[in-house]
Length: 313
Image (cartoon, rainbow, N blue to C red):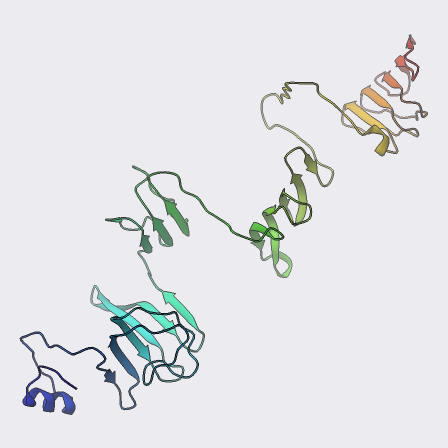
């Protein structure tokens, strides 16, 4: 080992005595600095590159799982089985842990007990807005995240949350609920890629059930639904025709209903316009249009399948 230490300081270092150095102490490349009776913690300035997943005597043990590093890289390693590494600071007279590498669990903890974690990808990032994770690439202006935000993405331009998956896969944001032992997909926004089924489809899920499938040309409800407004009008403004189609797939016909009650039909291809609260009765097949009275039992106007129009009353 070649260093600039004096013999006296070497002896003090070997004996573990405190030494107050007043000048820079230089260690050459590839000198292993070790702590502990069994070299538990080691540090190394390696002069040459090291390939991925490559063992290194006294530094990387067994069959490493590691990335390749360039020449003149600094390495820090705990070589003891299940030995951890932790970092602490004195905050207001009390030690607080801010980083913890748990060897037994294979987990990395970044701990910010009160101030949050800032990950800056541009110069001069501010303090985090939240007690969660703040990812910052530029200032959005005079605005701060809500106190309950666990994740904040901020930029001075476009900011994007990007998902990448194979063409046969899907990507989703899932909302879980602990109700009933845990419902992992209580709510969900999912996109199925071009090779999936159904292809190129956005899926929306609420109350633990799939509600809507949206494609480039179809907005398909997956169950009985109501479209309502809590205030104001509901306006449908079509640039072309407003079409109600696929009448033949409904065994009971298609109802355009005014009122809160249902109407039972025996035929198909019928359109029934009803106003009232207690309609009843049946219709025959034939593709007719009926306008009935408030009771829903008497035809006021009838257009038959041949195109004839009858005013009953």
